[in-house]
Image (cartoon, rainbow, N blue to C red; front, side):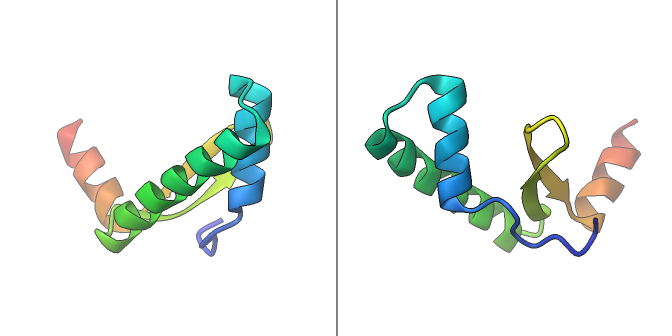
Length: 75
């Protein structure tokens, strides 16, 4: 799974928000754009490699190796 860069698109996230949060299509797409923007910001800072939906349809972040080292050092 380390090759994931972006497997949840704006449309995928918008559908997720419609289902989970009850948002209409317009608002779901607006919120999905904000979510993706936040993910890109975290990716540019080296905190995550990407994002995806897991087997239970939960939106997950794929932490970078550097972030995993930080997490490991805090335990």
